[in-house]
Amino acid sequence: MFQQILDPILGSLVLSAICAALPLILLFVLLGVFRVKAHKAALASLLLSVVLAVVGWQMPVGQALSATAAGIFYGLFPILWILVNALWIYKLTVATPWFEVLGRTIRSISNDLRILAILIAFCFGALLESLAGFGAPVAISAAMLMAAGMKPLKSAMVSLLANTAPVAFGAMAAPIIALNGVTGLPIQDLASMAGRQTPFIAVIVPLILVFIVDGKRGIKQTWPVAVVAGLVFGLAQFVTANYFAVELTDVVAAVATVAAVLIMLRFWQPSESMGLNDDVELSGAENLVSTTVGAAVPESAMRSTPTTALKSARRSADSPDLTDNTRPEPRQVWKAVAPYLIIMGIFSIAQIPAVKAWLGVVGSVTFPWPGLDVVDAAGNPVPATTFKLDHIKATGTLLLFSGLITMALYKVSFRQGLKIYGDTLVQLRWTIVTVTAVLALSFVMNLSGQTASLGAWLATAGVFFAVISPLIGWIGVALTGSDTSSNALFGQLQVTAANATGLSPVLMAAANSSAGVLGKMLSLQNLAVAAAAVGLVGAESLLFRKLVGWSLGLLVLITILIVLQSTPVLGWMVP
Image 1 (tube, rainbow, N blue to C red):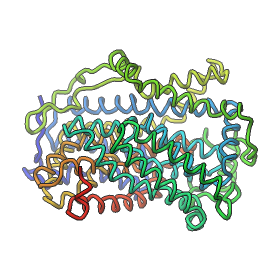
Image 2 (image 1 turned 120 degrees about the horizontal axis):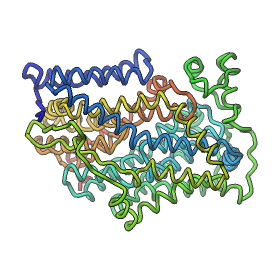
Image 3 (image 1 turned 180 degrees about the horizontal axis):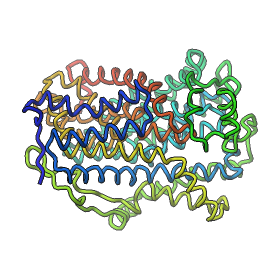
Image 4 (image 1 turned 90 degrees about the vertical axis):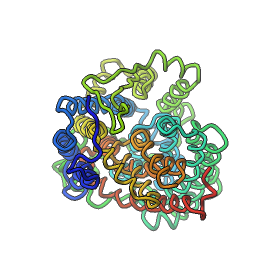
C-alpha cells in the first residue's frame, strides 16, 4: 500500500506545491512559448510527473507505472472512443453527396458566417454538449462550420470558444452530478448556484464569436443577434437549472436560443452580409501548412504558396462547392441532417429512465485497477484506484451505433465504412498520443499525491481562497479536458477549504465547475480534437496561443463575480 504525503519535499508544503506544479508549468510553457508539438509536450510533462512521483512523493515504481497505464486506458476509453467515432460519422457524411447538401442547407439559413457561428457553434454545439460532451461538440460543430465555408483555423477557434457556457451542464449534467457525488452537497443547490454563474458567461460568448469571425465590424453589424442569443441562452440556463430538471438545462437553453435566433432573423438582418469571399484566415495560419499531415492537405496544395495551399485544401474532396446557397428540397434537408438527428435520438433514448437503468446494469462494470493500492494522507482510499468501464452505455458506443445507422441510411458498404474508420485512425494518430499522455499525466499527479499537495497549499489562502477557487477549477479542466473530471478531482478540496475559511461550500464547489469550463478551450484533448476535425493536425500550439487570452479574460470576469458572491454585495445569490 502507498500512502500519499502532502509535504514530501523537505517537509515543506510550499516547496511540495511548487514541485507538483512543475509538470503543468512545463506543459503550458512548451505549448505557449516554445511552440512544441502537443504530443511531445504532453509526453515530456508525463515523464517529469512520473519522476517526481517516484523520487519526490516516494511512490513505488510499479504503482507509478500502473497509474500511467490507467490514465492511458482512460484516454483511450472513453475519451478517444468518443472522438474517433464522432469524427468517423463526419467522414461518413463527407464520403456521400449529402455533405454538400448539408452545407447548402446551413448556408440557406443565412449566408452570413457570423450568424452561422452563433447557430452552429453556440446553439447546435450546446445541444451536442448536452447529449454527448467529451469533445464531440467541438469536432462536429467545427466540421459543420467548414461545410458552411468558414476557414479551418477560424472554425476550430470558434468551436472551442463556444464550447464553454454549456459545459457545466453538459452530458446530461454529468459535472454537477459528479460534484454532488464527491461533496455530498444537495444537487439542487449546486445546480442552482452554477445556474447563477454560467449565464453571465453565456451572454458574452456570442459577442466574442462574431468578433473572432469578423473583428470589430462583426460586433458593429451583428451585435443585436449576438446579444439576443446570449441573453436567451443564459436566461434559459438560469430558469431550467433553478426550477426544472438540471439534466435538461442545456437542451432547453440550446433549443430556446435556436428558436429565438431564427425568429429574429425573420425580422432583422445585418446591414451587410459576410460571405465566403470576405472570410480571411487568421494570421499565422499559413505556417500550419508545413506541419499539416499530408492526408489533410493534398500534395499539389503543399507544393503551392502557403495561401494557395490553404485555399486548395478547402476545395479538396472534403470541401465541395461552397458558393451554392440554394435551399434543398425538404426531403433532402432531412436526409442531410439525419446523422445528427440520429445522434440526438439515440442519446435521448439512452436517457429514458428505464433504458438508462438497464444500461447501468448491463452496460457498465466496475473493478479495482491492477497494481494500484493507494490511500490519501488521511488514510482513505483514493477513488481513482477503482475503474468504471462503461461499454454499451458509453458515449463512444452510442456514437458507433449512430454511425452504423448512418451507414445503412446512406447505403455505405461495410467495406467502405471500415476503410473510412481506418483513415480516421490514421488521421488521429498523433491526437491519440496527445490525449493518452495528458490523461496519464492527470492520473499520475492525482494518485501520487501531487494534486493533493498543490490543492492543500492553495487552501491555506484563507478568505482570499474565493479568488483562488475559480483558478483551481480552471487548472483542473485545462489539465483533464473535462469539467466532470475536474469536479471529481477538486470538488472535495473546494468544500474542505471553504469550511476552513468560512466561505460557502456550495459557492466554492459550484465555482470549480463554472470557472473550470473556461479552461476547456485550452485543454490538450480539446485542442487536439479541434485541430483534427478541421484537418490541421499539429495546430494545437497555434490554437493555444490564439485562445489563451480569451480564456484568461473570461476567467477574470467570472472570478470577480464569484468573489462578489462571497461577500454581502452578491451574497444573496447563494442558495
